[in-house]
Image (cartoon, rainbow, N blue to C red; front, side, top):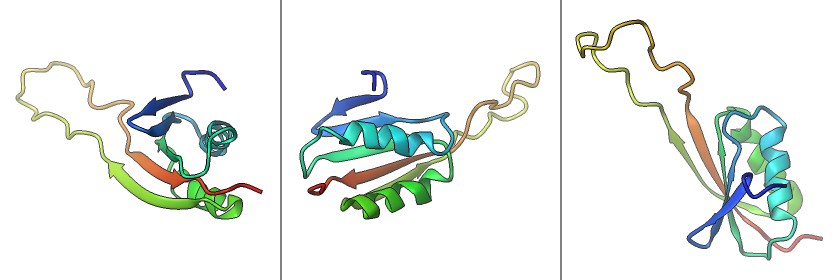
Length: 107
């Protein structure tokens, strides 16, 4: 796993899996968690709706605990008369889920 896949922010490890489809968010999470001590918080950022189910399932199977989930929707498009020309819209914008897992002792 490269340094781009996971970073440490305020005593928590963040795995940025936005834009990746199942099963890659869980694979990146597992790779980040492999060498971390019990008690570490790991947050996975994902735009894949399946991660909302896959990350907690992975945590349960591995003896970890899911401690939080937040959802961030893309910002609404500006009004039609905002002065923008063309039909650019919010292409590429999608909901992002932040799923936080507290690592337990792994067998």
